[in-house]
Image (cartoon, rainbow, N blue to C red):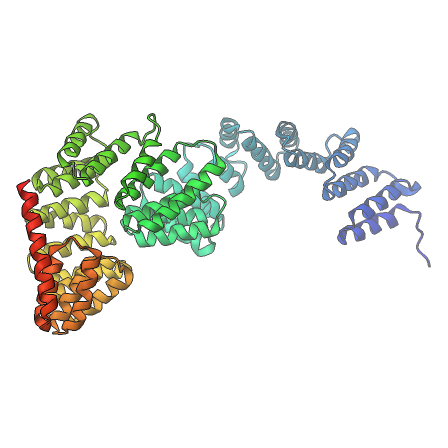
Length: 561
């Protein structure tokens, strides 16, 4: 028997079929036909609500609102229509209207879902105090709803830490709560727990924020290669918010002296910053770091240009004045630079950069005791500083205070067992004491922690040469040169290894590279003279004898001045 097409049930059924096929306009037509049927009875309210649902799917929100309001005119307790209206106003960002409906829903139907919408709207309106009051009132009634709890955690809730831990216990897959807890731990300097949380998140998904904070943790521990890897991954997974990522990447590159890479990262960060905001305080930090990079490259002109771009009201202005004195120092105005820095130091003793630069100048002037005092004072102000531990130990070694240097090195290692610099400091002490085996053990630990540390491979080669093990030394020196082919001392040490192996022709090639990279270093010229002598090359002997003599005469002349 043919089904009648003029009854409501037929059109309702057809509407559902069309809706499942995502033919929403056609489905709406079917429901309007159903409304016109004589047998619709008292179902018209539900049909009108369904028409509203279809208009929502079509994103025709004005028509959807009309339908739901028709329903509510007939039944002001129609929960589905109230919920849908609340959602539409939320989508349209008409949060005040959404809030009125959410309150109404919760007063009439105090369910967990309705309260969840209430919390969402309050959050959008930044009504954080109301969120906290509501949560305190409902804490026992809302059960263990991790979504509501997470909204509360986004406010300055007093027990935020405990709340985030509870959310994770209820729902370990709510990774955003784990990230927030990790950030909170980082801010409290609980780096161990923060690291564990970020690593857990990364094991589940590639989280740019987690990689970024892991990079910051590695930087603080002096594990700069790991930090760089994390910052690069943060950039890979979030290019839209990469400004901070590039800036921290630049700083990490600076820490391992990869200046070209640091400059590229910094300019990218500055480009993003300039494009997103007309002015930001961190712009001055970028100019300062660029100036620092240029100073390391001996490009005084560009360094000063960037320093002069820093605003006088900026937090980094004093640091800029410090760097200007460093540039004076680098240009030979040592006494003027020293006086300028000491004046700044008296005015502002807790400046991190002042400690570093004054310590550097005292070290250069061989005022080791004053340098050690500066670094000790710096450690009192910044007790977690990897850099100050390293610098203090180095200056104590230079002053041959090996026992005190070892005391600080052990504290350094206890605090940062995974920090390559700590093992390097111990290796330096052992080397000065001619305890070569112990030095090599520390260097082995260093290279295990940082496989790309060219200086560590060079140092290992140097120790092995001193032990007259040139065949082993050349392997490490070759690795150092592969990692950084710009260091003259690496070539000079490789030349020494070849001399010990009596491979003078190879030694000659390496020492020529060293002299080309550092033409002012007289020791390399003397080394070249010895190699020429061993080869019996009279022309080169005469050539290097003259060069060594001219260099020595120049040094004497400068001393007389």
